[in-house]
Image 1 (cartoon, rainbow, N blue to C red):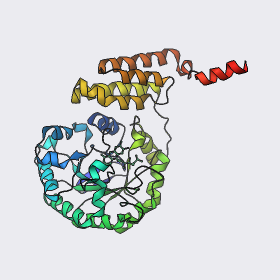
Image 2 (cartoon, rainbow, N blue to C red):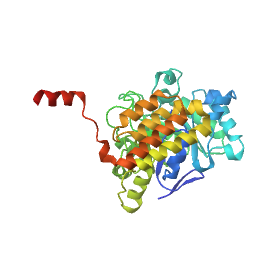
Image 3 (tube, rainbow, N blue to C red):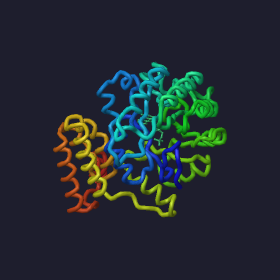
Image 4 (cartoon, rainbow, N blue to C red):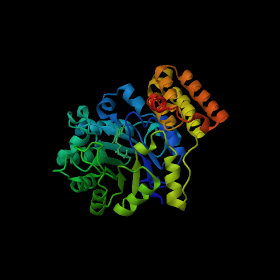
Length: 350
Ligand SMILES: Cc1cc2nc3c(=O)[nH]c(=O)nc-3n(C[C@H](O)[C@H](O)[C@H](O)COP(=O)(O)O)c2cc1C
């Protein structure tokens, strides 16, 4: 089931969400390899781009294999957002993204205090101004990622979706929570359906899709055109392969093996080192490595060792040794060691 956002084609409806600190270029490549139909960068400061800040521009770098890719901007000033849009449009072909997405959902104080992220949802005229100026300045589609509203008393997702469409946005992604809900409680998928019925542009549903069945259920329940996965992909880019197999063929693929996960971790380390240099890579990779080993036998120890080192080479060696151990001894040999409390209990009862 393919689709399109403006002129941009996507081959299946499952996309990688923009994730600050997580959807880095190597991770986006891994997600695309496993079947994510489109990927989004971490949010990037429109202000930084408009000022020509090199570090901000570096954030916008991607590899050809990541396409189609959206760069997500955060900001609040329509003039600055339009200028950042021009900067991205003026990049040489190979560095120009396929889409520009606007962050209208970030709940963190540092962002909303500057009237950006989810704060924009409280100011629909401002949304109109931002989107019209950005789409006027762009040859590539402009999209927005929103929440249901600011809080339970102001769920204006339908109005916002209509305003986005009127002002030239070519798709809207909806995280089905309010700003007040942050990431808590259950996402309210039915409101994605309400927005879908109110607009003609593609609607991308988002929030709490953890497994292939969830993705299919979200499409059936809401009629949304595509689904964006965030946390389910942490340490598990294969989730896209599983979702697609289930959607396309009703096939339930097994989760990745320990060997596959550790090999991906080692590769991610190398790709990150190539992308940002060894020092930054060591910092950036701790969380990814922790997710790749999560749930594997004795992973707590490896995680602890990885957290203690500042060297990517040592991290890779730790993962290689761990992989060799798992291969030599099999998973069973690594059954979690009994906790001190359990041993104490045994001693007391024995
Ligand atoms: C660590 C983290 C970073 C995030 N960064 C962004 C971001 O930069 N831009 C954005 O629009 N949403 C961001 N989000 C929200 C996600 O894109 C997504 O809307 C949310 O996690 C709900 O989807 P999920 O249940 O599939 O994770 C972030 C979420 C998390 C957990």
